[in-house]
Image (tube, rainbow over all chains, first blue to last red; front, top):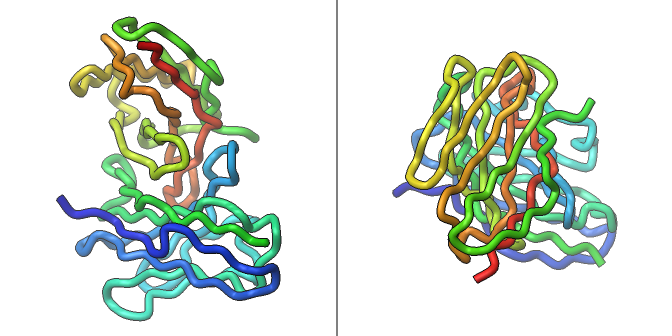
Amino acid sequence: EPEVTQTPSHQVTQMGQEVILRCVPISNHLYFYWYRQILGQKVEFLVSFYNNEISEKSEIFDDQFSVERPDGSNFTLKIRSTKLEDSAMYFCASTRDRGGKNIQYFGAGTRLSVL
Amino acid sequence: SQQGEEDPQALSIQEGENATMNCSYKTSINNLQWYRQNSGRGLVHLILIRSNEREKHSGRLRVTLDTSKKSSSLLITASRAADTASYFCATDEGSNYQLIWGAGTKLIIKP
């Protein structure tokens, strides 16, 4: 069964460093999302991406964040200068359709630890 | 405003009993979804119910949706120790159908 894959599973970085989190969505999906979950808290929407551009972003997704689909398969989230409060699980999701049938399939997540 | 709030926050029951979790939301939706998350792991999709549906079943899972009350419930029947996890509801209330999540219910099944 097709699945969303995320790498790495765990990323440890120093404050101020840049990190790139990688995702390979399901191949025939068109809509891509990044969410994050700070330990013990609810999942929060970061950004949605469609047709090679951002379609929506939350207040969390400030200038330190960017997303890219550099080729036909990868979808990346970059944090330019990490802060301690960026420590969280980051989930990538993809879906083929939106609206009534909008099942978003999630990757296993990347745990980002900023020291 | 906070969307997709679950209750209870935590639920501990004996194996074999039924577990019921509730979720409320605030605005109109196209669908509501339930996900499961084992401790520190990924989000696994369980079931989606559309706004024009009232009840849906999948194996030991039963989901109801009451759009007049803006609430949903997830019932797990004949619980097993392996059902121990956090359960989240999520609604597609975002302007671009992004999911808005509740805080989750932590379910513990005691053997």
